[in-house]
Each structure stands twice: as structure tokens, then as C-alpha cells.
Length: 143
Image (cartoon, rainbow, N blue to C red; front, side, top):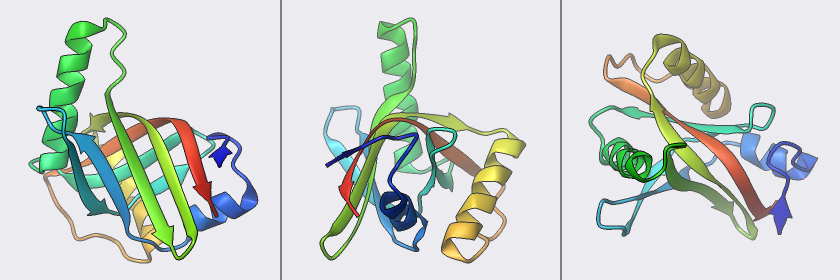
């Protein structure tokens, strides 16, 4: 079932506010999918999903490589195509879009605060922390 990224149903949004481990799928340089567990926050007002990570992680390297390859082909850029997903029983939700890596202090702090709100804990300080910001263009699921 398709959902409006900017105006999700109350049930869909409530599901994204519950505490769930999610998966993130990024493209490896050879085109195969790299799927890892992550925490995700969904901000429908901005049309964004966010994932905090270490700047040295494989998922971050995948996004940077895909973004560079895409930017070389398309002057508009836009980031690497990724998906985040969560499920519980028969309920599931997937968000898709283009990811970029943000390193500025304000973006990282905002993402950490959102993570703390959703997951009920503040991650320990990490000077290598970055945020993967996903500009959403597709939402699917049954929540």
C-alpha cells in the first residue's frame, strides 16, 4: 500500500514513532544491496528520514560512492538511492529516497536529538558521527 510521504496516515506515522530496529539498504559500488540494522527517524513535515552513523562505516562509504557516481552522470545530483524499512508482525513500513551525508554540527545534533526521542536513549558522544539524510519520494506499508 502506497502512502503520501509528506502526509502519512496517523497509523503509519504512529508506527514510525514506535521503537523499532530498522534496516537500511544502500548500493555497494558493484550495484549489489548492502542491508544493515539501524535506527531511523522519520520527519514527514520535512520529507526526510535520518540515520546517524560513524563516518567510517560501510553504509556511509556506500552512499558517498554512489553519490559521487551519480553526480558525475547527472548535473542535478541528488544523492544515492536508499531504502529504510521496519516490521513487526503483519505491520511493515518502507521509506525510499535519495541520501546524502551531512557532517555539520547542527545537522548531526538535530539527528541525535530525534534519535534520542524515538529510541529513548541518547547515543554516547562520537566525534566521527555523521547523519545520513534521506530526501523521501516513496512510502509504502501496512501499519
